[in-house]
Length: 486
Length: 97
Image (tube, chains in turn cyan, orange):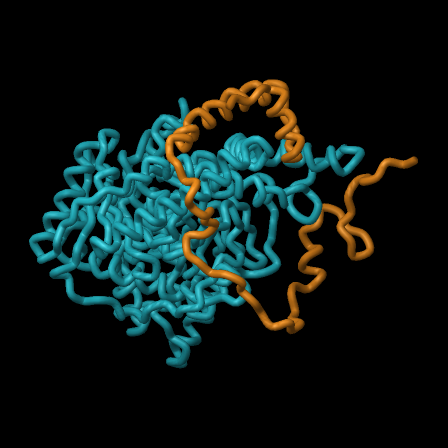
Protein backbone atom coordinates (compact mmCIF):
# COMPACT_ATOMS: atom_id res chain seq x y z
CA UNK A 1 0.00 0.00 0.00
CA UNK A 2 1.54 3.29 -1.12
CA UNK A 3 0.51 5.28 1.92
CA UNK A 4 2.82 8.19 1.16
CA UNK A 5 0.73 9.19 -1.84
CA UNK A 6 -2.64 8.75 -0.13
CA UNK A 7 -4.65 11.68 1.13
CA UNK A 8 -6.67 11.72 4.33
CA UNK A 9 -9.85 10.49 2.68
CA UNK A 10 -8.13 7.39 1.32
CA UNK A 11 -6.22 6.70 4.53
CA UNK A 12 -9.45 6.94 6.48
CA UNK A 13 -11.13 4.54 4.07
CA UNK A 14 -8.51 1.82 4.36
CA UNK A 15 -8.31 2.19 8.13
CA UNK A 16 -12.07 2.05 8.62
CA UNK A 17 -12.40 -0.88 6.22
CA UNK A 18 -9.77 -2.76 8.17
CA UNK A 19 -7.56 -3.09 5.08
CA UNK A 20 -4.69 -1.87 7.22
CA UNK A 21 -4.28 -1.35 10.95
CA UNK A 22 -3.20 1.96 12.45
CA UNK A 23 -0.04 0.27 13.71
CA UNK A 24 0.80 -1.00 10.22
CA UNK A 25 0.04 2.41 8.74
CA UNK A 26 2.25 4.21 11.24
CA UNK A 27 5.02 1.68 10.66
CA UNK A 28 4.91 2.35 6.93
CA UNK A 29 5.27 6.07 7.52
CA UNK A 30 8.07 5.48 10.02
CA UNK A 31 9.85 3.37 7.40
CA UNK A 32 9.52 6.16 4.91
CA UNK A 33 10.94 8.63 7.41
CA UNK A 34 13.87 6.29 8.06
CA UNK A 35 14.44 6.16 4.32
CA UNK A 36 14.14 9.88 3.51
CA UNK A 37 14.94 11.83 6.65
CA UNK A 38 18.72 11.29 6.76
CA UNK A 39 18.98 13.34 3.58
CA UNK A 40 16.08 15.78 3.87
CA UNK A 41 16.43 16.36 7.63
CA UNK A 42 12.76 17.27 8.00
CA UNK A 43 12.56 15.76 11.49
CA UNK A 44 14.64 16.62 14.54
CA UNK A 45 13.01 13.89 16.62
CA UNK A 46 11.12 10.89 15.31
CA UNK A 47 8.75 9.65 18.01
CA UNK A 48 8.62 6.05 16.83
CA UNK A 49 7.76 4.38 20.12
CA UNK A 50 5.14 6.93 21.13
CA UNK A 51 3.64 6.85 17.66
CA UNK A 52 3.22 3.07 17.67
CA UNK A 53 1.72 3.26 21.14
CA UNK A 54 -0.83 5.87 19.97
CA UNK A 55 -1.49 3.80 16.86
CA UNK A 56 -2.28 0.79 19.03
CA UNK A 57 -4.77 2.90 20.98
CA UNK A 58 -6.25 4.05 17.69
CA UNK A 59 -6.67 0.43 16.63
CA UNK A 60 -8.61 -0.20 19.85
CA UNK A 61 -10.91 2.68 19.00
CA UNK A 62 -11.34 1.46 15.45
CA UNK A 63 -12.19 -2.03 16.67
CA UNK A 64 -14.73 -0.78 19.19
CA UNK A 65 -16.30 1.65 16.75
CA UNK A 66 -16.29 4.37 19.39
CA UNK A 67 -14.54 7.69 19.50
CA UNK A 68 -13.45 7.55 15.86
CA UNK A 69 -12.76 10.90 14.26
CA UNK A 70 -11.39 11.70 10.80
CA UNK A 71 -7.95 11.91 12.42
CA UNK A 72 -8.00 8.62 14.34
CA UNK A 73 -4.91 6.62 13.48
CA UNK A 74 -3.56 9.32 11.18
CA UNK A 75 0.12 10.28 11.56
CA UNK A 76 0.83 13.99 12.03
CA UNK A 77 4.19 15.79 12.10
CA UNK A 78 4.52 18.62 14.60
CA UNK A 79 6.85 21.61 14.38
CA UNK A 80 9.40 21.46 17.17
CA UNK A 81 8.31 24.70 18.83
CA UNK A 82 5.06 23.12 19.95
CA UNK A 83 5.28 21.51 23.39
CA UNK A 84 4.77 17.76 23.56
CA UNK A 85 4.77 16.33 27.06
CA UNK A 86 7.71 14.05 27.72
CA UNK A 87 8.91 14.40 24.14
CA UNK A 88 11.94 16.56 23.48
CA UNK A 89 11.01 20.02 22.21
CA UNK A 90 14.07 21.87 20.99
CA UNK A 91 12.68 24.86 19.04
CA UNK A 92 15.61 24.20 16.71
CA UNK A 93 17.94 25.55 19.39
CA UNK A 94 20.89 24.02 21.18
CA UNK A 95 19.60 25.84 24.26
CA UNK A 96 16.73 23.36 24.52
CA UNK A 97 18.49 20.28 23.23
CA UNK A 98 17.24 18.11 26.08
CA UNK A 99 14.17 20.02 27.13
CA UNK A 100 11.18 17.81 27.96
CA UNK A 101 8.00 19.84 28.34
CA UNK A 102 5.91 19.11 31.41
CA UNK A 103 2.70 19.51 29.45
CA UNK A 104 1.15 19.18 26.02
CA UNK A 105 0.24 22.23 23.98
CA UNK A 106 -3.53 22.58 23.74
CA UNK A 107 -3.43 21.65 20.04
CA UNK A 108 -1.60 18.44 20.96
CA UNK A 109 -4.16 17.61 23.62
CA UNK A 110 -6.89 18.08 21.05
CA UNK A 111 -5.14 15.95 18.45
CA UNK A 112 -4.56 13.17 20.95
CA UNK A 113 -8.22 13.32 21.92
CA UNK A 114 -9.11 12.91 18.25
CA UNK A 115 -6.91 9.81 18.13
CA UNK A 116 -4.21 11.23 15.90
CA UNK A 117 -0.72 9.73 15.92
CA UNK A 118 2.13 12.16 16.55
CA UNK A 119 4.93 10.84 14.42
CA UNK A 120 7.73 13.33 15.05
CA UNK A 121 8.95 16.87 15.72
CA UNK A 122 10.00 18.78 12.68
CA UNK A 123 12.93 21.06 11.98
CA UNK A 124 12.65 24.84 12.05
CA UNK A 125 14.74 27.97 12.08
CA UNK A 126 15.83 28.52 15.66
CA UNK A 127 12.88 29.73 17.74
CA UNK A 128 10.99 30.20 14.48
CA UNK A 129 13.21 33.09 13.46
CA UNK A 130 14.06 32.68 9.82
CA UNK A 131 12.71 32.04 6.34
CA UNK A 132 14.63 29.03 5.15
CA UNK A 133 15.24 26.48 7.96
CA UNK A 134 18.94 27.13 7.43
CA UNK A 135 19.16 28.73 10.86
CA UNK A 136 18.46 25.61 12.87
CA UNK A 137 20.81 24.23 15.50
CA UNK A 138 20.07 20.82 13.99
CA UNK A 139 21.10 21.32 10.39
CA UNK A 140 19.11 22.59 7.47
CA UNK A 141 16.10 20.97 5.82
CA UNK A 142 16.33 20.28 2.10
CA UNK A 143 13.57 20.97 -0.37
CA UNK A 144 12.20 17.62 -1.62
CA UNK A 145 11.82 19.14 -5.11
CA UNK A 146 15.50 20.08 -5.39
CA UNK A 147 18.08 19.10 -2.80
CA UNK A 148 20.19 22.15 -3.64
CA UNK A 149 17.43 24.39 -2.43
CA UNK A 150 15.88 25.35 0.87
CA UNK A 151 12.54 24.08 2.08
CA UNK A 152 11.69 27.59 3.23
CA UNK A 153 11.01 28.60 6.81
CA UNK A 154 10.58 28.69 9.54
CA UNK A 155 8.26 25.64 9.25
CA UNK A 156 10.55 24.06 6.65
CA UNK A 157 10.66 20.68 8.34
CA UNK A 158 6.87 20.36 8.41
CA UNK A 159 6.59 21.47 4.78
CA UNK A 160 9.25 19.04 3.59
CA UNK A 161 7.76 16.20 5.64
CA UNK A 162 4.33 16.61 4.06
CA UNK A 163 5.67 17.29 0.55
CA UNK A 164 7.82 14.14 0.67
CA UNK A 165 5.01 11.99 2.03
CA UNK A 166 6.67 11.37 5.39
CA UNK A 167 3.38 12.38 7.00
CA UNK A 168 0.04 13.27 5.43
CA UNK A 169 -0.47 16.25 7.73
CA UNK A 170 1.63 18.64 9.76
CA UNK A 171 1.38 21.52 12.18
CA UNK A 172 3.49 24.59 11.66
CA UNK A 173 3.59 28.07 13.15
CA UNK A 174 3.38 31.39 11.35
CA UNK A 175 4.53 34.76 12.66
CA UNK A 176 5.40 36.56 9.42
CA UNK A 177 4.76 33.83 6.87
CA UNK A 178 6.43 30.80 8.39
CA UNK A 179 3.71 28.35 7.35
CA UNK A 180 2.71 29.88 4.02
CA UNK A 181 6.16 30.51 2.56
CA UNK A 182 7.60 27.00 3.09
CA UNK A 183 4.26 25.58 1.92
CA UNK A 184 4.68 27.56 -1.30
CA UNK A 185 8.34 26.53 -1.68
CA UNK A 186 7.46 22.86 -1.14
CA UNK A 187 4.28 22.75 -3.21
CA UNK A 188 1.75 22.03 -0.45
CA UNK A 189 -1.14 23.82 1.23
CA UNK A 190 -0.61 25.88 4.36
CA UNK A 191 -3.02 27.90 6.47
CA UNK A 192 -2.35 30.65 8.97
CA UNK A 193 -5.69 30.90 10.78
CA UNK A 194 -7.34 34.03 12.11
CA UNK A 195 -5.33 35.21 15.12
CA UNK A 196 -6.90 33.75 18.23
CA UNK A 197 -8.66 30.81 16.56
CA UNK A 198 -5.99 28.29 17.49
CA UNK A 199 -4.73 28.25 21.06
CA UNK A 200 -1.16 29.36 21.59
CA UNK A 201 -0.83 27.52 24.89
CA UNK A 202 2.26 25.38 24.44
CA UNK A 203 3.47 27.22 21.35
CA UNK A 204 6.88 28.52 22.33
CA UNK A 205 6.52 32.24 21.70
CA UNK A 206 8.50 34.27 19.20
CA UNK A 207 6.21 37.30 18.80
CA UNK A 208 3.02 36.68 20.78
CA UNK A 209 0.83 39.25 19.01
CA UNK A 210 1.66 37.67 15.64
CA UNK A 211 2.27 33.94 16.28
CA UNK A 212 -0.30 31.35 15.23
CA UNK A 213 -0.21 27.58 14.89
CA UNK A 214 -1.65 26.36 11.59
CA UNK A 215 -2.28 23.36 9.37
CA UNK A 216 -0.27 21.99 6.47
CA UNK A 217 -1.44 19.30 4.03
CA UNK A 218 -1.51 18.21 0.38
CA UNK A 219 -5.26 18.40 -0.14
CA UNK A 220 -7.74 21.13 0.72
CA UNK A 221 -10.11 18.75 2.49
CA UNK A 222 -7.25 17.46 4.65
CA UNK A 223 -6.31 21.02 5.60
CA UNK A 224 -9.90 21.81 6.54
CA UNK A 225 -10.17 18.76 8.78
CA UNK A 226 -6.89 19.36 10.59
CA UNK A 227 -7.78 23.02 11.04
CA UNK A 228 -11.14 22.06 12.51
CA UNK A 229 -9.60 19.80 15.13
CA UNK A 230 -7.02 22.30 16.33
CA UNK A 231 -9.33 25.34 16.41
CA UNK A 232 -10.87 25.90 19.78
CA UNK A 233 -11.59 28.40 22.45
CA UNK A 234 -8.98 27.86 25.16
CA UNK A 235 -9.59 29.51 28.52
CA UNK A 236 -5.87 29.15 29.26
CA UNK A 237 -4.96 31.42 26.33
CA UNK A 238 -6.21 34.92 26.94
CA UNK A 239 -5.89 35.75 23.25
CA UNK A 240 -8.15 32.88 22.31
CA UNK A 241 -11.34 33.82 20.47
CA UNK A 242 -14.56 32.71 22.12
CA UNK A 243 -16.39 31.92 18.87
CA UNK A 244 -16.39 28.25 17.87
CA UNK A 245 -14.88 27.38 14.49
CA UNK A 246 -17.16 26.64 11.56
CA UNK A 247 -18.24 23.03 11.19
CA UNK A 248 -16.47 21.08 8.48
CA UNK A 249 -18.26 21.93 5.25
CA UNK A 250 -20.11 24.81 6.86
CA UNK A 251 -18.89 27.56 4.57
CA UNK A 252 -20.37 29.51 1.65
CA UNK A 253 -20.89 27.34 -1.38
CA UNK A 254 -21.56 29.84 -4.09
CA UNK A 255 -18.57 30.99 -6.09
CA UNK A 256 -20.21 33.23 -8.69
CA UNK A 257 -20.46 36.82 -7.57
CA UNK A 258 -17.58 36.44 -5.12
CA UNK A 259 -15.46 39.59 -5.39
CA UNK A 260 -11.76 38.85 -5.54
CA UNK A 261 -9.40 41.72 -4.80
CA UNK A 262 -6.00 41.91 -6.47
CA UNK A 263 -3.97 44.50 -4.54
CA UNK A 264 -1.48 46.07 -6.89
CA UNK A 265 1.24 46.34 -4.25
CA UNK A 266 1.65 42.55 -4.32
CA UNK A 267 2.43 42.59 -8.03
CA UNK A 268 5.40 44.93 -8.22
CA UNK A 269 8.77 44.67 -10.02
CA UNK A 270 10.41 42.39 -7.50
CA UNK A 271 7.81 39.70 -8.19
CA UNK A 272 9.18 36.98 -10.49
CA UNK A 273 7.26 37.48 -13.77
CA UNK A 274 6.27 33.82 -14.12
CA UNK A 275 4.76 33.89 -10.61
CA UNK A 276 2.78 36.98 -11.55
CA UNK A 277 1.59 35.13 -14.64
CA UNK A 278 0.53 32.05 -12.67
CA UNK A 279 -1.44 34.07 -10.12
CA UNK A 280 -3.17 36.00 -12.88
CA UNK A 281 -4.06 32.70 -14.53
CA UNK A 282 -5.70 31.64 -11.27
CA UNK A 283 -7.60 34.94 -11.25
CA UNK A 284 -8.83 34.29 -14.78
CA UNK A 285 -9.99 30.81 -13.89
CA UNK A 286 -12.01 32.27 -11.03
CA UNK A 287 -13.37 35.02 -13.23
CA UNK A 288 -14.55 32.45 -15.72
CA UNK A 289 -16.45 30.76 -12.90
CA UNK A 290 -18.32 33.98 -12.21
CA UNK A 291 -16.13 35.74 -9.70
CA UNK A 292 -15.63 39.45 -10.04
CA UNK A 293 -12.03 40.66 -10.11
CA UNK A 294 -11.42 43.93 -8.29
CA UNK A 295 -8.26 45.96 -8.75
CA UNK A 296 -7.37 47.76 -5.57
CA UNK A 297 -4.59 49.34 -3.63
CA UNK A 298 -3.25 48.92 -0.10
CA UNK A 299 -0.89 51.89 0.11
CA UNK A 300 0.31 51.21 3.66
CA UNK A 301 1.67 47.84 2.54
CA UNK A 302 5.00 49.45 1.70
CA UNK A 303 5.57 49.84 5.45
CA UNK A 304 4.45 46.32 6.36
CA UNK A 305 7.81 44.57 6.43
CA UNK A 306 9.49 47.36 8.42
CA UNK A 307 6.55 47.39 10.83
CA UNK A 308 6.77 43.63 11.17
CA UNK A 309 10.52 43.70 11.87
CA UNK A 310 10.06 46.33 14.57
CA UNK A 311 7.10 44.72 16.35
CA UNK A 312 8.16 41.09 15.96
CA UNK A 313 11.71 41.65 17.06
CA UNK A 314 10.74 43.89 19.97
CA UNK A 315 8.40 41.13 21.15
CA UNK A 316 11.08 38.54 20.49
CA UNK A 317 13.55 40.34 22.74
CA UNK A 318 10.99 39.87 25.48
CA UNK A 319 10.06 36.28 24.57
CA UNK A 320 13.68 35.23 24.53
CA UNK A 321 14.36 36.67 27.98
CA UNK A 322 13.22 33.46 29.64
CA UNK A 323 16.20 31.52 28.32
CA UNK A 324 18.51 32.41 31.14
CA UNK A 325 19.71 29.00 32.26
CA UNK A 326 17.77 29.18 35.53
CA UNK A 327 14.77 26.90 35.22
CA UNK A 328 15.35 24.79 32.12
CA UNK A 329 17.53 24.40 29.11
CA UNK A 330 21.23 24.86 28.74
CA UNK A 331 23.19 26.54 31.51
CA UNK A 332 26.79 27.70 31.09
CA UNK A 333 29.05 26.34 33.76
CA UNK A 334 32.03 27.89 35.45
CA UNK A 335 30.55 31.30 36.12
CA UNK A 336 30.86 32.75 39.58
CA UNK A 337 27.69 34.77 39.70
CA UNK A 338 24.24 34.61 38.24
CA UNK A 339 24.62 37.60 35.94
CA UNK A 340 27.60 36.16 34.16
CA UNK A 341 25.99 32.75 34.11
CA UNK A 342 23.03 34.21 32.24
CA UNK A 343 25.17 36.18 29.84
CA UNK A 344 27.35 33.21 29.01
CA UNK A 345 24.40 30.84 28.73
CA UNK A 346 22.73 33.04 26.19
CA UNK A 347 25.97 33.71 24.36
CA UNK A 348 26.72 30.02 23.99
CA UNK A 349 23.19 28.82 23.45
CA UNK A 350 21.65 31.18 20.88
CA UNK A 351 22.49 31.25 17.19
CA UNK A 352 23.48 34.45 15.39
CA UNK A 353 20.07 35.21 13.91
CA UNK A 354 18.35 35.01 17.28
CA UNK A 355 21.02 37.21 18.87
CA UNK A 356 20.60 39.76 16.11
CA UNK A 357 16.85 39.96 16.60
CA UNK A 358 17.17 40.16 20.38
CA UNK A 359 19.60 43.07 20.08
CA UNK A 360 17.54 44.88 17.48
CA UNK A 361 14.36 44.35 19.42
CA UNK A 362 15.96 45.56 22.62
CA UNK A 363 17.06 48.65 20.74
CA UNK A 364 13.54 49.37 19.48
CA UNK A 365 12.28 49.34 23.07
CA UNK A 366 15.01 51.60 24.40
CA UNK A 367 14.48 55.23 25.30
CA UNK A 368 15.21 57.33 22.26
CA UNK A 369 13.92 54.62 19.92
CA UNK A 370 10.70 53.51 21.58
CA UNK A 371 8.53 56.38 20.37
CA UNK A 372 9.88 56.64 16.84
CA UNK A 373 10.07 52.93 16.17
CA UNK A 374 8.02 50.68 18.43
CA UNK A 375 5.16 53.05 19.21
CA UNK A 376 5.05 54.28 15.65
CA UNK A 377 5.04 50.72 14.30
CA UNK A 378 2.02 49.98 16.49
CA UNK A 379 0.25 52.91 14.89
CA UNK A 380 1.21 51.81 11.40
CA UNK A 381 -0.19 48.44 12.32
CA UNK A 382 -3.50 50.21 12.95
CA UNK A 383 -3.15 51.94 9.58
CA UNK A 384 -2.54 48.64 7.76
CA UNK A 385 -5.56 47.18 9.52
CA UNK A 386 -7.65 50.09 8.32
CA UNK A 387 -6.43 49.63 4.74
CA UNK A 388 -7.43 45.97 4.79
CA UNK A 389 -10.81 46.74 6.34
CA UNK A 390 -11.39 49.24 3.55
CA UNK A 391 -10.32 46.68 0.96
CA UNK A 392 -12.78 44.14 2.36
CA UNK A 393 -15.66 46.52 1.76
CA UNK A 394 -14.82 46.25 -1.93
CA UNK A 395 -14.07 42.53 -2.11
CA UNK A 396 -14.73 39.27 -0.26
CA UNK A 397 -11.20 37.97 -0.37
CA UNK A 398 -7.78 38.86 -1.70
CA UNK A 399 -5.66 36.87 -4.16
CA UNK A 400 -1.90 37.45 -4.18
CA UNK A 401 1.30 35.51 -4.71
CA UNK A 402 2.59 33.84 -1.52
CA UNK A 403 6.21 34.67 -2.30
CA UNK A 404 8.06 36.85 -4.79
CA UNK A 405 10.48 34.07 -5.72
CA UNK A 406 10.58 30.28 -5.87
CA UNK A 407 12.73 28.27 -3.43
CA UNK A 408 16.19 29.81 -3.43
CA UNK A 409 19.44 27.89 -3.36
CA UNK A 410 20.99 26.93 -0.04
CA UNK A 411 23.21 29.76 1.20
CA UNK A 412 21.93 32.16 -1.44
CA UNK A 413 19.91 34.25 0.94
CA UNK A 414 22.73 34.71 3.38
CA UNK A 415 24.99 37.07 1.56
CA UNK A 416 22.88 39.87 2.85
CA UNK A 417 20.18 37.84 4.50
CA UNK A 418 18.82 40.72 6.44
CA UNK A 419 17.15 43.08 4.18
CA UNK A 420 17.66 43.19 0.49
CA UNK A 421 14.99 40.74 -0.59
CA UNK A 422 12.63 40.36 2.34
CA UNK A 423 10.89 37.13 1.54
CA UNK A 424 8.13 37.98 3.95
CA UNK A 425 6.82 40.82 1.82
CA UNK A 426 3.66 39.01 0.72
CA UNK A 427 2.88 37.30 3.97
CA UNK A 428 3.44 39.67 6.92
CA UNK A 429 0.27 41.73 6.50
CA UNK A 430 -1.92 38.77 7.48
CA UNK A 431 -0.04 38.48 10.77
CA UNK A 432 -0.14 42.22 11.44
CA UNK A 433 -3.88 42.40 10.82
CA UNK A 434 -4.74 38.99 12.30
CA UNK A 435 -6.64 37.88 9.19
CA UNK A 436 -6.36 34.31 7.86
CA UNK A 437 -4.05 33.49 4.96
CA UNK A 438 -3.99 30.30 2.92
CA UNK A 439 -1.31 29.32 0.43
CA UNK A 440 -2.06 26.73 -2.22
CA UNK A 441 0.14 25.37 -5.04
CA UNK A 442 -0.79 26.94 -8.37
CA UNK A 443 1.94 25.81 -10.70
CA UNK A 444 5.55 24.91 -11.36
CA UNK A 445 8.23 27.24 -12.68
CA UNK A 446 11.40 25.57 -13.95
CA UNK A 447 10.41 22.55 -11.91
CA UNK A 448 9.83 24.48 -8.67
CA UNK A 449 6.49 25.01 -6.93
CA UNK A 450 4.67 28.33 -6.83
CA UNK A 451 2.08 29.30 -4.24
CA UNK A 452 -0.91 31.58 -4.55
CA UNK A 453 -2.24 33.19 -1.39
CA UNK A 454 -5.82 33.89 -0.39
CA UNK A 455 -6.67 36.23 2.47
CA UNK A 456 -10.11 36.91 3.95
CA UNK A 457 -11.52 39.01 6.78
CA UNK A 458 -10.95 37.73 10.29
CA UNK A 459 -12.97 34.57 10.98
CA UNK A 460 -13.76 33.95 7.32
CA UNK A 461 -11.61 30.90 6.73
CA UNK A 462 -14.65 29.39 5.06
CA UNK A 463 -14.25 31.62 2.01
CA UNK A 464 -10.60 30.61 1.71
CA UNK A 465 -11.52 26.91 1.88
CA UNK A 466 -14.26 27.35 -0.65
CA UNK A 467 -12.09 29.07 -3.25
CA UNK A 468 -9.12 26.77 -2.66
CA UNK A 469 -11.44 23.75 -3.00
CA UNK A 470 -12.71 25.04 -6.29
CA UNK A 471 -9.20 25.67 -7.59
CA UNK A 472 -8.24 22.16 -6.59
CA UNK A 473 -11.26 20.69 -8.37
CA UNK A 474 -10.51 22.39 -11.69
CA UNK A 475 -6.86 21.43 -11.82
CA UNK A 476 -5.24 24.71 -10.84
CA UNK A 477 -2.97 22.78 -8.50
CA UNK A 478 -0.29 20.89 -10.41
CA UNK A 479 -0.69 17.13 -10.85
CA UNK A 480 2.99 16.62 -10.21
CA UNK A 481 4.01 16.45 -6.57
CA UNK A 482 7.35 16.13 -4.84
CA UNK A 483 6.35 12.60 -3.92
CA UNK A 484 6.43 11.60 -7.59
CA UNK A 485 10.17 12.02 -7.57
CA UNK A 486 10.78 10.22 -4.31
CA UNK B 1 19.79 57.31 13.88
CA UNK B 2 22.87 55.18 13.96
CA UNK B 3 24.20 52.90 16.67
CA UNK B 4 27.76 53.01 17.95
CA UNK B 5 29.62 49.92 19.09
CA UNK B 6 29.40 51.28 22.60
CA UNK B 7 25.62 51.43 22.35
CA UNK B 8 25.45 47.90 21.00
CA UNK B 9 27.55 46.73 23.92
CA UNK B 10 25.07 48.46 26.25
CA UNK B 11 22.16 46.78 24.48
CA UNK B 12 23.82 43.41 24.82
CA UNK B 13 24.15 43.95 28.54
CA UNK B 14 20.48 44.92 28.78
CA UNK B 15 19.64 41.74 26.89
CA UNK B 16 21.93 39.69 29.11
CA UNK B 17 23.82 38.58 26.04
CA UNK B 18 27.59 38.35 26.24
CA UNK B 19 29.14 39.29 22.91
CA UNK B 20 32.67 38.79 21.61
CA UNK B 21 34.63 41.78 20.34
CA UNK B 22 34.09 40.60 16.77
CA UNK B 23 30.37 40.18 17.32
CA UNK B 24 30.06 43.73 18.63
CA UNK B 25 31.62 45.00 15.41
CA UNK B 26 29.61 42.82 13.07
CA UNK B 27 26.31 43.24 14.90
CA UNK B 28 26.74 47.01 14.97
CA UNK B 29 27.06 47.04 11.19
CA UNK B 30 24.08 44.72 10.76
CA UNK B 31 21.83 46.54 13.19
CA UNK B 32 22.57 49.82 11.45
CA UNK B 33 21.62 48.25 8.15
CA UNK B 34 18.31 47.19 9.62
CA UNK B 35 17.74 50.63 11.09
CA UNK B 36 18.37 52.06 7.65
CA UNK B 37 15.78 49.76 6.14
CA UNK B 38 13.06 50.35 8.73
CA UNK B 39 13.60 54.11 8.53
CA UNK B 40 11.01 53.98 5.74
CA UNK B 41 8.37 54.27 8.44
CA UNK B 42 9.43 57.87 9.02
CA UNK B 43 7.74 58.76 5.72
CA UNK B 44 4.24 58.09 6.93
CA UNK B 45 2.24 60.23 9.33
CA UNK B 46 0.18 58.29 11.84
CA UNK B 47 -0.19 60.77 14.69
CA UNK B 48 -3.96 60.58 14.59
CA UNK B 49 -4.04 56.81 15.01
CA UNK B 50 -4.17 54.79 18.19
CA UNK B 51 -1.51 52.10 18.54
CA UNK B 52 -2.76 48.60 17.78
CA UNK B 53 -1.29 45.76 19.73
CA UNK B 54 -3.21 42.82 18.33
CA UNK B 55 -4.69 42.03 14.98
CA UNK B 56 -8.03 41.06 16.44
CA UNK B 57 -9.60 43.02 19.29
CA UNK B 58 -10.18 41.34 22.58
CA UNK B 59 -10.15 43.32 25.78
CA UNK B 60 -10.17 42.53 29.45
CA UNK B 61 -10.33 38.76 29.40
CA UNK B 62 -11.39 37.59 32.84
CA UNK B 63 -11.54 34.24 34.52
CA UNK B 64 -13.16 33.01 37.70
CA UNK B 65 -11.01 33.25 40.80
CA UNK B 66 -10.93 29.52 41.22
CA UNK B 67 -7.95 27.45 42.25
CA UNK B 68 -7.01 24.77 39.77
CA UNK B 69 -4.01 22.51 39.51
CA UNK B 70 -1.26 24.05 37.46
CA UNK B 71 1.74 21.77 37.05
CA UNK B 72 3.14 19.18 39.43
CA UNK B 73 6.20 20.54 41.18
CA UNK B 74 8.34 17.57 40.19
CA UNK B 75 7.49 18.13 36.57
CA UNK B 76 8.47 21.78 36.78
CA UNK B 77 11.77 21.01 38.50
CA UNK B 78 12.56 18.11 36.19
CA UNK B 79 14.30 20.30 33.64
CA UNK B 80 16.22 22.37 36.19
CA UNK B 81 19.98 22.47 35.59
CA UNK B 82 20.40 22.55 39.37
CA UNK B 83 17.92 22.35 42.20
CA UNK B 84 17.91 22.23 45.97
CA UNK B 85 15.08 22.14 48.51
CA UNK B 86 12.45 22.46 45.80
CA UNK B 87 14.14 25.61 44.52
CA UNK B 88 16.02 26.38 41.34
CA UNK B 89 19.65 26.75 42.31
CA UNK B 90 21.78 29.42 40.65
CA UNK B 91 25.23 30.90 41.21
CA UNK B 92 25.65 33.76 43.63
CA UNK B 93 23.22 36.64 43.20
CA UNK B 94 24.25 39.13 45.87
CA UNK B 95 27.68 40.47 46.64
CA UNK B 96 29.03 39.51 50.04
CA UNK B 97 29.60 42.56 52.20
